[in-house]
Length: 374
Image (tube, rainbow, N blue to C red):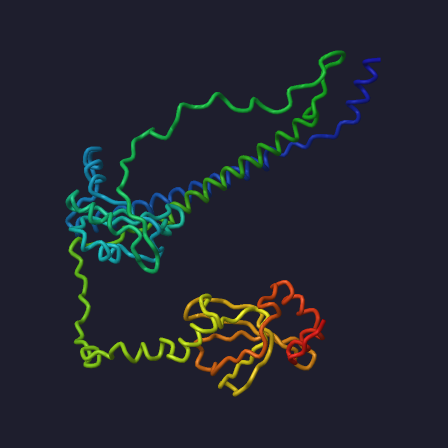
């Protein structure tokens, strides 16, 4: 029985085509391309290193630090500047911190792959005493942004590495029921073709990633920005103040335009003050005379908004079977006077009833026409 089963299974298997020669040719071609790219990247790095050496020799300064002590000392007199505009230059940052003290170096960090600024910088001063003055520039406005200024931290190697983990996930499927003929494995069968295709795809993808990484690092290497310690900032031109500024326009014209007139002050005290016996209450029927159109608007007082000089009130009426509400400001020059035609019944009216009248135009028109209803 076992022999017959094995014959049937072997007869149903698909033929495996050995395409190892084609894979080897493609891999060789990819390796040749990667080797050419590596040579080009090495040439570019050599040219950039030579240009950097020439610029350092021309400037007559050596920016490299030899020991960790020098880096620690430099960090002790440096500050971190965050939220920097991406188009800002070291000269502009130096001009912003020029009043704090003598500046040795301004460093704007850029992304090594794209070459774009990261949005923060480091400013190194000549003396550590200048850091206190630089910290006062925190939340100052630079190119339309509020920058963040803090002391620079000294990086300690391995400080944030941690204690290490206890291992990760041990793998995928580990077998099922062991009794009888063994457990079921979903990954069994078709191994040779799957492994061949997977190794081919992984090799090609790894070669492509390596080539792209080499080209990116070679093409995006940026020449160091030329910077001078003794940058001269052009002072702002001095302009003499005009004669009108020396003479002064005076405060009275502004007060006459902005402060309310005596008539408006009397209106505020008598009609809109809570201590006045003649104050208006919601539910009163009033008439407002305005000089804007000119016009006269009569209606029911719905609400009063007491805000001192900005006091206002809302009046509602029915005009051609349409509810119209108007808000008037007491200190507006268009409001001439306010007349009380009828006070609310029993001296006051609940606000709920006033807003209920919005949905009852007949009752509102009766109130506006100075008629009482049961």
